[in-house]
Image 1 (cartoon, rainbow, N blue to C red):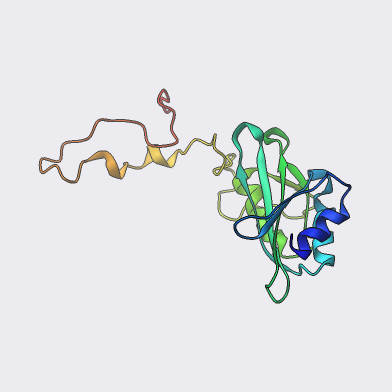
Image 2 (cartoon, rainbow, N blue to C red):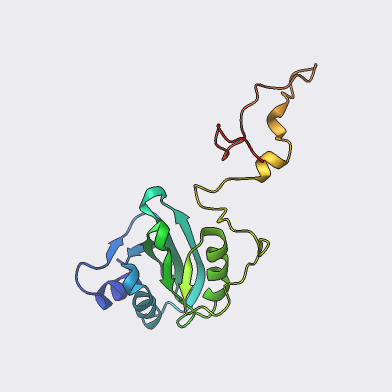
Length: 179
């Protein structure tokens, strides 16, 4: 286990954090209630370089939120990860520990719908402010796939240009009618 991972595990109660040392950086899973405390422990142990904060959809198990941290000389790397329920995707902000987390939290909020308590400006970065979807969640309907012609509609090897069997584009339910 890396020194950074050991510091995070030691800062939490026994059994609260789980460390995985496999391919790539060591990953430490922490409860969401101890999210900021784990980040503070990593920072105090020398993880002063904040590289990334993002999420990924676990389906019915909710969302995983992960940060990548490193020491100033980049010799020690660490992933700190927590999970949040899909219907209660809220974490305290990491901006008090890493100011660079602000932009990443805005993007994660916009794309996955994770709220960050204490973040002062979760304004949209890429999407129209009126959009009410979280496009990187597995259940999001990809409307652009219906609005634009799907490039695979015509078989490029068919000289007559006959259309292929019509199926909905990926991400669109088969029974969806549109409006």
